[in-house]
Image: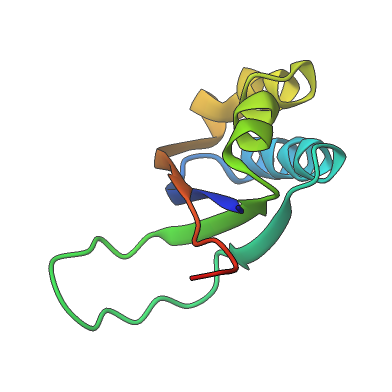
Length: 99
């Protein structure tokens, strides 16, 4: 069953963000993840959302997402994270193909 990393991001430093983004993207691909949403336009329909960049990454399953998050490859991106951005980050299970 697929799993999803969902993040809402505020960029702090554009140069550091580009470094973080390229390192994160390489590590995500290495661990079988793929971007479904990567900071496109947000249209608020209900509630009190903050208008930030939304990022959604799909992994084959929740364990693979956990392995990616704890990986040495992603650790390289985390070295610049606090300079690059602030965010909220969650991991959620998807829906099985059977529904």
